[in-house]
Length: 334
Image (cartoon, rainbow, N blue to C red; front, side):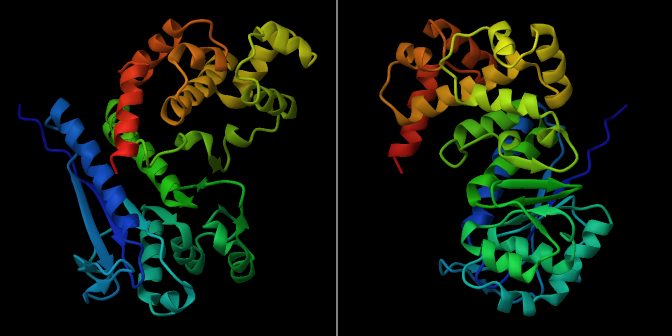
């Protein structure tokens, strides 16, 4: 029997005057790279369909001077799986006043199942619709104070780059949006496609999505204060060679209690969590320092570079040396 084609992965970008062009181009290029990688592995994966949606069909001139031509108006658009409201330059309030139909479309689409992503001051479109009332949100740091005055019912989380609540994501910056896009690529096309995109757009992506978000209703904000203290200690003691037994004793716990409570609070083992922190530190040092791989190993608590090499091959599919070459080529050839 012939296999039925999968439904498209439909992603819409809401566009408006003063839109930040890179809020469109970067995520679109990342999504297309994820789809292309997945197609090479399996020609039957969900095809990506990207659409630019605006209140009218008129061409929009971005701050960069690039003319953006919408594909459809909000009246013509169907309900996509994901809608991204990009960041914009200048005060967003005049733009919001001129886009009432677009704001209503966002609300209608969310109520019929769309996931909504607001970026930087584009988050104001979500707030204006009422979608963020009594929900966590973040926005560009420059707009925090005005946002608090304009939307007092929103639970602003300025210390987080990403918030997530019941199908609504907010990204404080373009880098944070890139992390959300990698997260969505993993959900749609699998972890290999996500890792491929992360490697090839590594200069845009600073931290993994899961480590910088405020996620409502999950273990990211768990109530176990002692485990939170241990997580903080781990983040600031990557070079320590202390065993988990020793760490547990420092906090008045047995190894068994630490293991059980850490898993219950974070849905991750303490060993996996600490290892993940170390791997991210290694990636940062490979890209930003001239330390040898052996020296980096010591910096993060490993006695030899073989351990790091093994972790890299398992997690990223490449050696630390190859990762350094790739990252520096991208960083210094721009």
